[in-house]
Image (cartoon, rainbow, N blue to C red; front, side, top):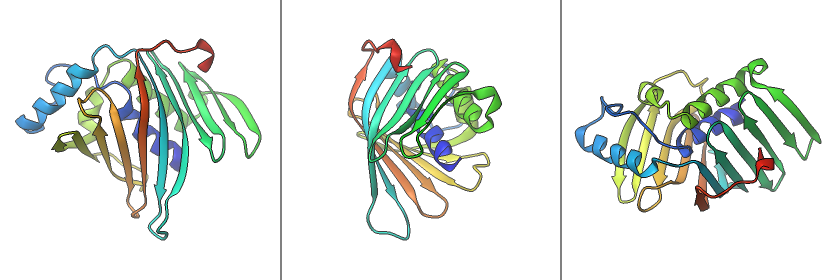
Length: 210
């Protein structure tokens, strides 16, 4: 569950940041202008494909645990997240139907999000992103623009996070078109950093990815 909740926090921001006019009420005027610019830059995104590296830092160790993989998103409601190193594992979502796999255990199975509460939470949040329904974002997080060149956001949850999530940091690539880095900070001092590279936007994606 912990890993899925971390993935949820990541995808919430990596998918499109489309927001209705006025949705940033409650943040400072200066921050609202930055967020509105991000909204304009992300308008029209239909697909995303990206490599990523994941660095997991534990408070009790100095060295990071490294992994890497690939991410695909297609509007509406299709997503693939897979780790390729050091262990192959991942999942695909397409509407209410999903499929997941894990090389180490040898398991590969289909699932229905309506029968899996954790995956249902993940799917609902992701589909909200895909459907441009971001009204919940300002209700769920206190948002601060920490830097503008490139843009870096800090998001503190306003909801119960089962004790794992302290805050999120999201940094955009120069120009602001897509997310470049995400940090998921946990209450116990551990954190996960994801770096997105070779990002392709609105390129055709093979149907069998989903």
